[in-house]
Image (cartoon, rainbow over all chains, first blue to last red; front, side):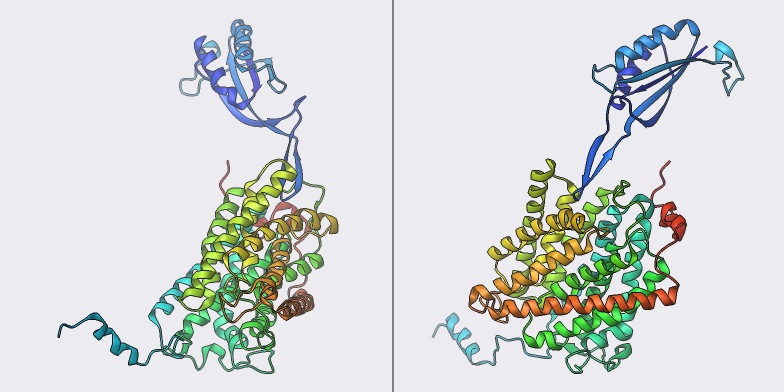
Length: 112
Length: 430
């Protein structure tokens, strides 16, 4: 099994979710995160005091899938999340040792 | 003979009739208005100012700012009816204070009148001014003062700074007698609070990380709501200062709104030009700037004057908080001096220029042939500023002695006062 972690622009979440639903992925976990890479921060001004905000809000999606599907899923996410501009995000793939369904106790492929 | 209307009306010409309100006869219209006015001004402190200031404070200190504001209102309420009213409005002693004749509201009863309204209503209306004045001061020193110190300081300050100045201007003291024009509190409230705040900020020192760390306001939403509540309440503040429901109150009502609105627009356009984006914080600040400046002038100037006063306030306030503070390097955290001090001074001077006897025969400014008025205004501004500055410094040292230091411990300041002093959080944020 593989874990796919995708950090994307927040407004792209719906597009990514639809795209994954199309290929049969029916669940995911998301968190609201902040980060920066090549996309620099922005400026906010309060009564003349300028603040540089380095960290930009992003959304992190985490999915665990069978190893065979991982490549397809990554490609689908990349396609749906891309805008072509700096700050589109990154996707990471890592191996998962074990997975378990809480309700039934099923493990492995039956759990994801 | 057919009875004609004039036959019924004519005899009325012979009944005793006075244009001036008969002294010491209760007028229900005036009384009703003044009770409502008092309630409007009351709301300005625990609701208007608490939200306005709270929203500008950093999240970790949001509740502490609100707490200082609410407790200021409560302390003022109690002090006022114990000794404050007496010191401010009791029978005059040497033009300086009112003395203790009315300690615990002694000598004032259900039927006592102040002009055409019950004395109790008058006293309570004045009380709301005392409360908001001390509350304004805290705007300079949020994020770093001990709560116990604030309580002690507030009690001393209302008693020994606010009450005397209120007496000087409104209670029969020397400034009023000199002819200083301050309709609703340009000197008594705004210059007074602004200077005191600045002094307190200078003595307490800058916040840790000031000028280096980003200090984000917790909620411009709360600040905007606070500004709107302040605007609403200010109608009581200014129009109510006529102490009657009449034409001058109506005039004050109109110029108050006009000044606030154009103040907001002026600040907004200034900011838009300089920073390329108009902000809600700027609009809210401009509203308050316009309201502050019109406060001393409200019952003395006409509508065109209020446009100048409000626009001037918006621009001066913007410069006061962006340029002045940065150039001089002090940490007047929420700009009590930058807005209330600076715009209060502008308003007091503008009153000396624009006071129009056609609006209110009690006031004639430079533009209406009385240049001396401007000079009188300057004296009242300087006297207020000096008395407040010196007095506040003395009270700071007394407070320091009583509470063993004014400033919170470094760890508390870093942790945040909501947690360190109150054990609470403003919002449940997961």
